[in-house]
Every structure is written in structure tokens, then in C-alpha cells.
Image 1 (cartoon, one colour):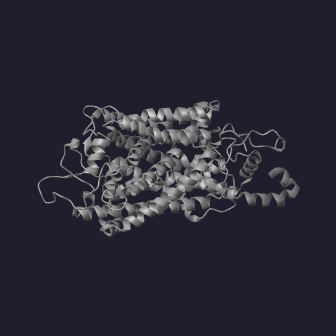
Image 2 (cartoon, helix red, strand yellow; image 1 turned 60 degrees about the horizontal axis):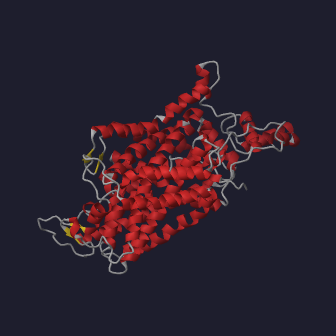
Image 3 (cartoon, helix red, strand yellow; image 1 turned 45 degrees about the horizontal axis):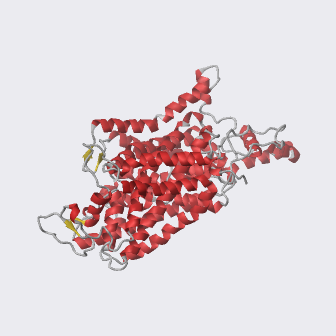
Length: 615
């Protein structure tokens, strides 16, 4: 196994398919390095997919969309869209041993999808790091006794009530009371601005130092390479479940928790048919499974060619769903307890959405614990930190792989440090008083919207242009198994049509984006569309570039060939590549399997001739 950093060794120019004359040569280009063990790939995918999207984003999306009314559409979308895309990305990455850019050698005109996805990964990476900076701040504060958010402070100058109190004062009076956990987050941690009319303000030096912690961790792991990521994945994938089980047990013992959990699993049938609920279910699925960001393709490109990704996608998708449901039960149990204490009849009146769910609601409840609140605070924020690191690592490695694939002469350590420095510098804007407005802003324009558009084109590219038939033949060539009807129908019909319908709905019903009711200036909206365009316009830009690079005599010929696989498309290994291209050229139909072709050649040419032709 090569001693270089395998996660960041460039894909390089794959050899042309070996022929009868050159297949036996001993001089072969070095292959892309692989994971140390198959289990490391599986655990890395778990750490990537099971992250902040499950524990932080899923519960508040469920809360905003009617609890059980969101869970049912989410599960349906997961089965008809999420799992098919996850399996597709795993397959295409492992089959070609190419990252999320070069994997579009299958359809060169669509290479811009990969660049757009890397762009969105960079945007998400920026605000995920800022959330981990906040998590670090709370993790440090969790060791204090008493917890700093459990009691009011005179400097806040507000009608405050201690979060440590198990009964609410001021209920029924004309005075609006604010719990100390919320004031601590807004006034002490964020020093949050009410709007951006006077700009975003100056960075908070304490948050800047906290932001340095996750970036330092990510930089050190990236320098070591994919094998280091694999070793770290054992901890990143397993530790959060230990903490979640502890928190679930504690949540179930809270008074009023059953009401919150019941709200989470009981559907509001009138809201299930709201198109916006389905749109939010799809965007949540992208963040939950981490599909359509290029991460899954990147990780699977370091697999053995024959690794059983069908088993892996089944394990990851089931585990991801169970984690989201587990996190939902924990959080809604906590919300139910908080509603019980405050006498509130509506759950959404006692909780803040977005970052407030993790940094206001849960700390508020922990402050009310009479038994060892510091332990539960440390456990909760340590879990958030570990989950965030797993997600950040996959996003950062995707960006790094793209750079190393493009500029092969750059040292991995230099690229890792460069990404970390740039990411840290950009992330400083989230540590300002207006940082939370910017987080919501970039989440919408640079991530959610862009990813949905590119997801449509990704599925259309591999299902309709490359073709489900050829994709199924590639699967049989690689894994020796036929593709079931469920996968064929989803890839060919259900998944692309559902994504297109949801995208069209979102465009037709688009309303100006707001953050917590705040309406941005016209200049910010113009900037937001520029952020969106920078990701989506990668597709036509690289498509035009691919056409211009072609040497055919006619423009029509250039365009047609840009939608066909390159001559070296296929397995990385030269012998397998030659065998694959031989099977393609001799296929009688798109679904004729490699094994059937070998059998036909045995009947036609004899065993010895087949050994020469097929390797």
C-alpha cells in the first residue's frame, strides 16, 4: 500500500483500456489507494451521514412542519429518493474509483454538477464549523458550577427568569419573561444584533478562538489522509450513540416528555398534503444522508472494486433513519417537559428553531435537572461536537480531493492547511453579532437551493443520459448481482420525477427569504442570487468548456460526444477496464451482463480465446 496520503492522491489520467498487445505489460500507472478495512469505509459513511443534520436539523424541521406530519413525508422521500440516490452515488464512485468531479467522465458535459456540489460543500462546511464553534463554547461552559445559563445576570437588563427554576414566574401576568438560557445565548454568547441595518458588527474574540478548535482538528486529520480518517471514524461513528442512549433514558424520565414524543409521532393529516412540507422533507434528506454534496462518491471511490456497497447502503440508510427518529424522540421529549413546566399548550411556543433548539431549549431543560446537570450538559455538547466533526471531515475531504485531483503537484499538507485557513477566515463572519442572519442566508442561497437543483441534474445524468440499463450492467459487472425492480423504477422514473416536481413547486411558490421574520435589503437579495448562481452556473460553464475541448469537425458531433463516456471510463484497474470495455462492445442490449458475455464468448471462441480476450 502506498505511503502517500491516499485520500488526496489525484485521480490522474486513467489508463486507456488495455488491449491484447499491452495488457500484459508490467508498467502500470499507480492506482488510487484504498481504505485500510471495509469497516472503516462503512463507519466513515455513518459518521458523515449521521451528523448535525440528524440531531440538530431534523428535530426543528419536524417541529416547524407539524411533528408527525413531517415524519411521514420524510420517510416516503427517504425510500423513493434518498436511498436510490445514496446507492447510485456509492455505486458510481466505487465502480470508477473517481472523485465527484472526474466521475462525470461518464457524461463529460455534466461535469459542472460536481463542481457545483463541491461549492455547496464549502458553503455548508463554513457554517457547520461556526456551529461547532458555538458547541465548543458551550462545552467549556458546561464544566462550570452552576451552569452559566442557569441563572440571570444583571448585565442583561431584561425581564429574566432563571432556567434552573422548575416552575415559571410571571405566567398569567402582563410581563413577558425570558428564560436565562435564551438571554445567555443571545446576549452573552452571540451578542446578537436585531437586524443587519447597521452591518454585521465585529467578531467576538471568544467565538473566534472556539472556531479555531474544530478547524485545527479537521486540518490535522486531513494531513494524515484517508487512513487517518478511517481510524478516527471508529470513535466518530460509535460515541454519539452511547450519549444518545443516555439522553434518551433521561428524556423518558422527564415529566411531560410523553406528550412531546406523542406529538412527534402523531401525524397531522391536514398538513401532510402541504407541498412545502414535502419540499422541506427533501431538503432535510439531503442534509441527513449527505447525498448530492459529492461526499459519498468521494468516500466510495477509495473502496475495493468488489466491496459490497449494497450492504453498506442498507446499513447506513437504516441507521440514519433510526438516528433521526431517536434524536426526534429525545428532543421532543425535552420540549414536552419544558411545555409541562411552563404550562404551555402548544409545543412550538416554548422552543426556538434553528440554532436555538440546540443552544437554548436543551440547555434550558438541563439547567432544571437536580441531578448532576454538568454531566448531561457535557455529554450533550460533546455529542454535538463529535457529530459535527464527522460531517465536517467528509465535506472538507471532498473539497481537498477536488483540489488535489486538479493540481496534483500540490502537497497534501499544504492543501489541508490552505483549506483550514481559508475556511477559518471565512467563518469569522459567523462570529459577529449578525452572524446568525448570515448563517440562515447562506444555508438557503448557497446550500439548500443549489443542492436541490444539482440533485435533479445528477439523477437525470446517470438515470436518463448514462442510462439505467448501462448502470445495471455496470453493477452486475462489479458486484455480480442483478439490480432489483425497486432500484430500476426509482432511478428511471420515481426519483427524477419527484425531484423535478418539487423543484418546480419551489420555483413557482418562491417567496423572498426571511430569517426569523427579518427581511433583508434588496442588495442582500441580489447578493444571495449571486451566491446561488455561482453554484448552479457551474453546470453550463463546464458544459461549454467540454464542447470547446472536443476536436470533431462539426459542432453537433462535439456536443453528442460530450454526452458519451470518455474512452477510459470504467474500472481503475487496466485489466478490469479492458474487460469492461470488451463487454460493452460485445453487448447485444443495454442489459446484457458481463457474465453472460463471457459465457457467449466461451461458446463462440473457446476457453483459451476467452482467456486472451477477457484477461
